[in-house]
Image (cartoon, rainbow, N blue to C red):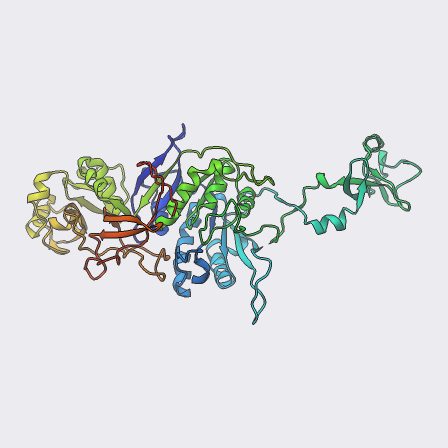
Length: 586
């Protein structure tokens, strides 16, 4: 399955409620996060997410690089992922997303015309053809000037469910003005309102009972009855609800203000993209309108349900879920996205209310408690502090290698100290870094392994794992016989502990995104990496900001330190930083 990664709370906003829940913004590779959810071992999310998500909406990167340029030319992420690689990476994530869904959950996959047909085949395979609900067409623009072909003005949203017992709330689509003018073609002078006409008669069943009677000199046609009793007709008459044509039978007035619209169809032309003067606009390249997410979330979730978006971008899904009273989890790889979402949620009270035509109507409610969580990226001091707490350290280091922690007495089972877990049924020893004598004076070498053989008295054979700082071992994997002549395969799971302690970055990590072709790419991290402080100095200059010093200990894949600004991915600025909460301005 590959690696999962333990979670760390970076920042918290508000105290959790009685149920202990806080909404989450997760920074890191969404695949690692989904694997952590799948294992269901991390104490932050154990039994809270897996199989409990009612709605997944994802809008993965799918367009061209030019589509992701802000007005200042800043690229949030590149879309230049080869088709096969893109599809395989997304397929892997969809496998885990399927597992997160509750039995009555649904997933909406937002795509463009270049990839939707490929993903339809993949989704049919993963979810089942019978779980395909709709291919939704969203008209995102009115017209596009493509001189050599038809203008491309729509996106595709694939809608699937996990089971046949899915949540579905009827959503009505307001009619266009053209529809109103064509079908609400009558005018009531008293109410000063348009209306259309509905039948007051219905097909006859049996002898018609009390629904056959004379009304204002009229009778229903043969084989039909009135649709209402005579008493109800009198109520309609008193309320001015009956239309009497010059020729034909009476009809019921339905006024424009009473018309909810039609149940939404699979072509959505009534939701516009965000206008460049809209209060909602965040100048984030892939931002979607809140009305689009409002429709999806209302249709496939209920109050208090959990909504998940692992390509969260500007956080539209979070903002709408918050306003609709849903719980939510957002995940994105880039810090630009994380700070954009954080600011958006902190300022949500000042944002536009949903479903209100008044542009100045604000939401007016502070966000429910939420936290920012890091997955696969760890602060140096936080990792070191774990050594002071043996139990927390054991949980952390097991999660780092994707090994579940179980409540079993492995020491008694194997009669060996230091056994804290099993990997595929084989023992896992954790080198005791909480013991300074071990940390600084003991090495895992051949004699160390022979001592394990002696103490085990032939009780171990096959694979034997040891999780150890790489500075505390002088050997690689090794094979030794036990007293019974059976082979023991010692496998060392190493991690860069002492290197971290000295803040020397000479081990292989994921490179910082430093070009348009790899910024926030759909990455599959092969390990984990650690955050470290950088040395940065600058000054205000000509209405801007000039960097004068930038130093980092981060190394590239070649093992060399970055020079100049090569190690710099992006600069985020808070013009009014209070020393506590960073709110992105630029």
